[in-house]
Length: 526
Image 1 (cartoon, rainbow, N blue to C red):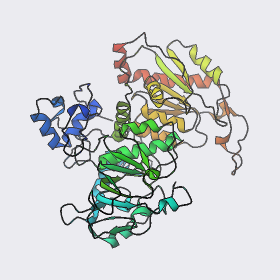
Image 2 (image 1 turned 180 degrees about the vertical axis):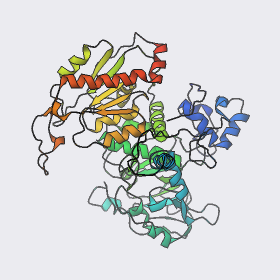
Image 3 (image 1 turned 135 degrees about the horizontal axis):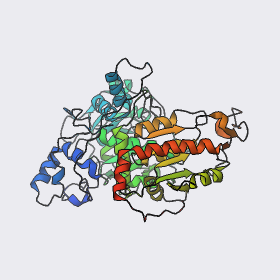
Image 4 (image 1 turned 90 degrees about the horizontal axis):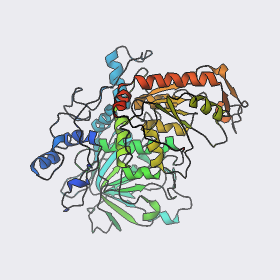
């Protein structure tokens, strides 16, 4: 992918997200330095203020002539990224131009552009202070102003709210605006917990009174911009980071002013069970405030000045999960930006030095299935090559997520069995290789994710050089490749790692890193 190179100023950056009437503080901005020119270009009012303010430290990022890719009149030479499609589309399309365009619309900022173009108003404001509701097709993304939720029945509910589609009844969500009920109901065609906001918004009603801070309809008034999230499996890194990725993509869909990437917001998780997850620190990339769930506001009528219903993790033809990705293409700018954004917001330093050696991290599984039975033998074989630095990582639910991401940044080749831990590939350096040691009969999941992230993917090639412990025992389906453990041929393993290392050494970004060699950098086993 050809990505725009812009002059970077390594400084703390931020988007002003103060409440109404609060003075803007430039030092509150907190965006990745590479993203600042794109942010200011898409927010010209803020850019003008920065230009006129002698105290604004971001003037070098103004008027750079770049854009994310979804803005009106954004040309391909200005855009954050341009997809690479070196391979054949396998009959998906007829021309290379169609292939590039298809990938851009499926998995890059073109996906954001599509949702922005689909936005339609379903409840129209007619006077100042009225409510509003606008959504993309099938109610996959929505946003509104001055809306209310009536959760007074929630304390009497017997079952916890989790993947539930029956939380609201007619009239328990709405606002004071001209409702086009028929058009809204036609969009309620994907009634499933994590596919759309149809289960909730089919109950939308017009109120006679305006929704304002002192409205009788409001027991709780949320003045900060709010996001209501429906989460996938929070114990699984792959599925939970689908939540975070879609929240980031939704911020781009909602990017209409300088508050789009603010952390001074309120996230409300659409469930009553507590959110316990090793991956919870990822929320720090999106909000500086405590995350609520429905138990926090149960029994109350909650009103929102501004609220976003973001893209969901299991949408039909969604992105990250359930993505129909055209063959032959790679390197999504949207995924690249997500990776940098999350690392920056979490304070994880991206690697800026090298030591001339290829750093290999092997992820060790402590699960019942898909363990590497001769793991120590394979690690010892790699350690014989003194041009490698080999680490065994044991990422447990007790280990700090930031430390895991820091190790990712010092990984050139990431080796792991098929499983959610391979989601770490999203946070590897651009020159890295992910080696899915064995895909266990699921060849596309992490291959596609690596293509979207723009890093090289390899997997085991010769099934005669691996030995399963047994046939595998799925609790319902019987013999299954994912439900056993494996021995791997040492020679074939070291050969494939050697191919990965060769790719790393040939990458210009890794080569540039060696000019700032740090021979004193040490790692401890994770």
